[in-house]
Image (cartoon, rainbow, N blue to C red; front, side):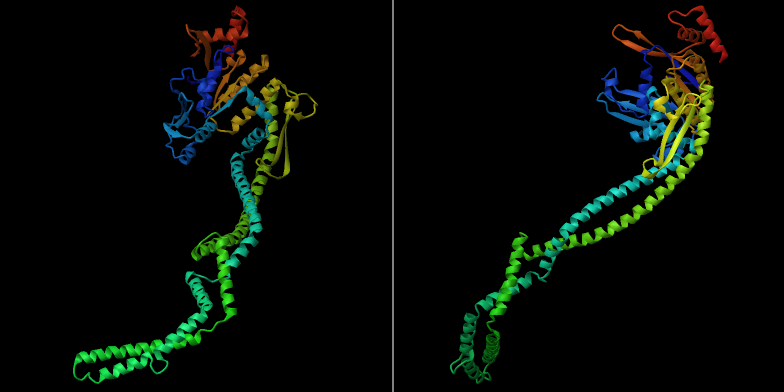
Length: 535
């Protein structure tokens, strides 16, 4: 399908297959893919859209997404038999987010259900931001607000951690102090164990030292005296042979070593004093260490020291947690201030734009034969920030002269809602550089002169952008520069939908059919020709 004219119309009987075009379009623009909509589920489905964008500045999008800019821009979506899809922009694979982002800058599809969006705050604010020129400002606000929400969530998590840490702090501090009481390593514990064992066997050790010392140097017939005599005997013969001299020197060295041993034995015996209180202190210390080993289910001092370091880290983490919380609170205050300032600037600009929006909408409603209808935007400032800033908005409407303004869904009929939406889209088209807009039966509930006026508005919009209208109204169909007709034929096995461009004569017949029931009458043909010639 191609749309060479600025205003193209699509017509066809209900059920002929116009929705197939919109479904395919939606898939190419990033809507959810469903293999159930494919006729031949054994083959891959490919949908492509081609846009001429030479008059639209989209280079920033391509740079941001690492894509080469080319004109035309081709969007492609491929769906396999399992329903899995792939997306492409100018043959480069992209994710759905990128596809939807560029689609928002290329085309606006207004389907019948979209009129319901008029009552949704998000849509209302989007419209106001487009009129007010605050769309980019609001995007920045949303980023700041998202950051603020994330920071607050992180703060809540940290404060919950801190709350739990405070419960554990005293316990971990006790464990650390208990372990820190002993400046221990493996050698220290071994010394304590040796000292305990020595003191517990002090009497036996002292006796052994005394006997050994006595044998070595005590009494007349001690070992040192005997070795001294040997030394004297050898010394007397050293002058006769070097071998005797060497033997003497060896005996002399042994004598010196034995004297040292004797002196140390006496010293050790003198130092060894049984001290019950000291022994109790040592054993108490060893008992505490063994209890700590058992308490922490470890078998060595090195493992105990590792646990001590881990506990120390937890205590330090608590201190760092407090510092992190304080830092985050300052960051939240800073971001919140930026959010409030941005929201206030946006709100001020929104309020300034409201008068112009209301005036423009009222003028178009007047052109659509709603002379007494009035449109009003109720924008109120609220306390606190939200996803929409500091504004609460309601679109108000009064259809009759002197009537009370009420919310749209409470007072506007289907036809009035259609005309109001068209008015908004018409003004919006003047504010937003968008290549294409598609209206899917926005003319529901409209007929006669109003339909003709609605068609005129389509024509005006087509002066600034490409407009495609799916319609059942001859007045609107006659406005198109390019008329596509959807129909279906029955094959042997199935019904198929087709679409074709109508030639001048075919178009006259089609519009005549729309003007009458059954076979077109002469007057209907004439009326159709008059409609086409007037456009």
